[in-house]
Length: 45
Image (cartoon, rainbow, N blue to C red):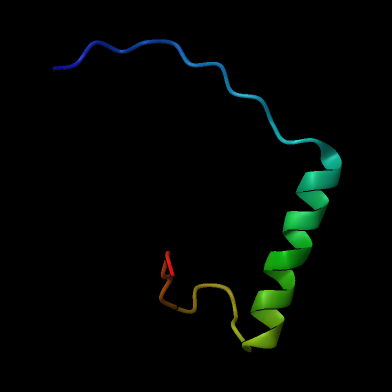
């Protein structure tokens, strides 16, 4: 088993959190998605 090491994480600034929340909200609204609806995610060109 691998040894656990402590990790320090910082939360994004409030402005960034607000922006990202808006992006996600628009995505769900644009595609008519509701909570718990399945959808596929692709990364890359």
